[in-house]
Amino acid sequence: MHRPQPAIPVPGAALCIDPAGALLGEGTLWSPREKALYWVDILGRRLHRFDPATGERKNWSFGEEISALAERAHAPGLIVTLRRGFALFDPATGGEPHYLHQPELALPGNRFNDGKCDAQGSFWAGTMDFDCVAPTGGLYRYDPDGRCTCHDQGFAVTNGPTWSADGRCLYFNDTVNGRIHAYDFDSAAGTLSNKRLWLAFAAGDGVPDGMTTDAAGRLWIAHWGGACVSCHDPVTAQELCRVPLPTSHVTNCAFGGPDLRTLFISTARTGLTPEQLAEQPLAGGLFAVAMDSPGMPAGLFGG
Image 1 (cartoon, helix red, strand yellow):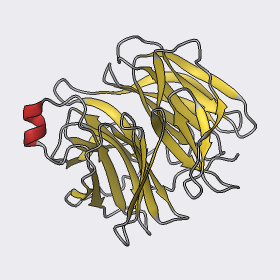
Image 2 (image 1 turned 45 degrees about the vertical axis):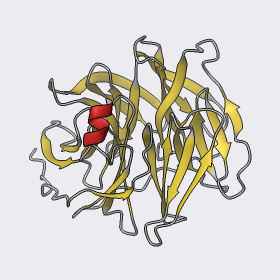
Image 3 (image 1 turned 30 degrees about the vertical axis):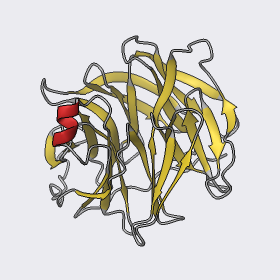
């Protein structure tokens, strides 16, 4: 059967909207409730909030690494991943985050990295070796009722996940090896099956970092070491277009704005030499790109 092809997206130019100089920017999340963009500096142990309408910037400091987040559906505040696990934090009140579950206390060399909520309200997040070498990372699902399940293992660095537009496929990154895997996703059971290689990055193109899905089902993937975000067909993985960035380490992306037609992109300073930092003064900044097609709203945590 012929599958109709949506028009190839035409992105605008990337504009730095917050030259924050983050060590390791990540965790981009658009809040429709607040009409603001949340993102994190993992190694700087800081949560950032940017209001595009006013230009207002806020930030909160933590006693350990904070790496990913999602809004809660039935309560104020956020679910976040800290170094050791899943926690709740309310930016409106501040205070200490409240840990919910720490699944890898036996692996002190690991930390949590990227994560997102599915449409059913569960939070999916990956762990990684802090030194990015040992294949000790896994992919976890944390449910609103407090259950935590490991669905895959054997990664040195994890990134993603994101889902297909119909919710039947989950994509997840084996970053160190430059590979993106696809899994069949059973939304009712919350399980994965049929793992297969979906895309392998070419040599010299960086490695896959954070990613998101637009309303047409296309995947937008940040290139660590590749100075861009690339857009891909969800079935064939064919590259459709690129958004170039003026810095090498591009880490994550999320659609936002009132009509979800702005792609927000985080970047990092860590791993760059002094010479590279001099050539890339906006490294670690938050960027925005106007798009001609919308993204999808982020999933909410059901707890």
